Length: 358
Image (cartoon, rainbow, N blue to C red):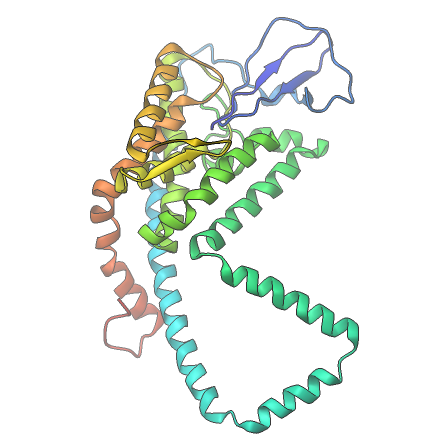
């Protein structure tokens, strides 16, 4: 969920960052409070005053550049995904040829060679190889979706650790939180989708993403899923920008909930009768379609009533994009990638006259 954290003005000149555990993180000014102890990091963390922009007193911020960035980044994401899929298929075809060639060259002497090589290793090296083999078996046992999402989780974990480094606080607030009132508006639209200030916040988002990773990658494929996920993060932030500018409620946000909501909405739209449950309440089950309706209703109510705990606009933007993509966007965007792939194939292999792999 998009987290809503608030920026307080304590009695001293410093300003503090008060994180909450949900998705898009909003910071706002409140009445003066007594300053907490410096060691209580879970409650507040020092934040540079310059990085918490106040609502503009003049004209509302222009959203033209963020809109251009959203359209351009989305197009580049799907274009790069199409090229990545082409390269993956090409690599697999070449690997299959190499494997067949190796099988023809292998003989009974190979087994004896590797047996002698293993016996010459020390016990430590043998144990290390066995450990690496176990890790490889575990990795191979994961689904393609889980392996893909593992990289996303790793990036989010690195960004979370960066939030704990005091020297990086100014840069983190500038580039890893999105705010239409900030001078830097475009790049944070993407980076804030990998940013979480709270561990609970990150774990909640990444658990949902991990749970639905196998289904969404099976439905779309790895490359198309990555394009949808990255685009959803930027589009949900753009939707949040529009709502914040329209209402005048300017506060920074961060979190992956917009992108996660797009994944959740896509799965629930394609499989509305699938049964879902709650982790700590296994006896309570409901259909995916009803779960999606409930989430959209809660976020719509939060947006209308002005709730600050979550960035409900970003949630709704991600959900709308996920529903639209599996309903219409797949046909309008992904199925029309063939000209781009052919052009790339011609650049990649000028000597080949035929079309690339389909």
